[in-house]
Length: 186
Image (tube, rainbow, N blue to C red):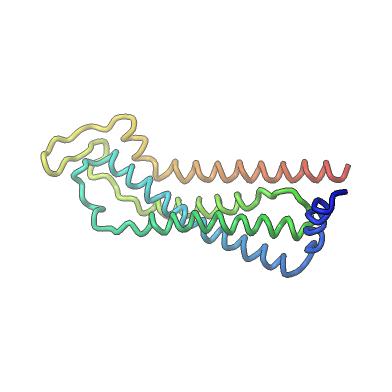
């Protein structure tokens, strides 16, 4: 056996079951969920901007005074979430002593993102008039088309879609872990 391969194989075994690695795993997992929330808030802020453009006139200036901090914090949340999910995955591999990459950090990030999108959707601006894009400047109102109605209900279906994606990834993680366990025991 090659010495380089042997060292790579024995490195995870050295940390197998170590309490420091377990602590790092727990902290990184909690941080992944916590950073997923601002990432979801930022994504929700972007969706809210597109929703407002679709259901109201471009001259609607109700949200113009709000600074874009939510989107900036959301971007930082995405980068932090990727970093902490990587740390959680590495800690899980070391703690378990197995080379397989776990999927649970993606589930944690998506769960936090789902909560963030749901929180953001509760604060989206209502339309000036349901079914009509009101033009407060030139008074040339236009009825909504399919896109307008789809965006009007986005405060419900976007968080629901995020929840479905989170549950699908959770199901994939559980079945993948089950298959991995069955293969390793047989």
